[in-house]
Image (tube, rainbow, N blue to C red; front, side, top):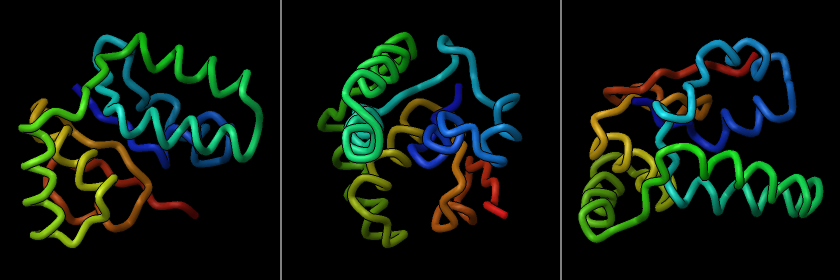
Length: 124
């Protein structure tokens, strides 16, 4: 199982150089865990940068994946991770979801780079 961070989704959807290089690492929907906070971040980004129709199609695609709602267990773990690693709330939720699902996190956000179970791809 793999959690794909919002940063990678955006690079992949923009077909950026990093997005093209990560295409092979993108998991199939059955192996992709999507925290609901990632759906929120993607919808916000698309509404701001592109349009509602594209936002709806991306969210529909993520709904084919294993959608991980923010429940009490993940919220409490995220609070611990926020305190321990100084992560933002959204990043702590993403990382807590990764750990709760026994997954790895695919990201290009440097603040995750040194954490366990993270596949970090640096932007060039």
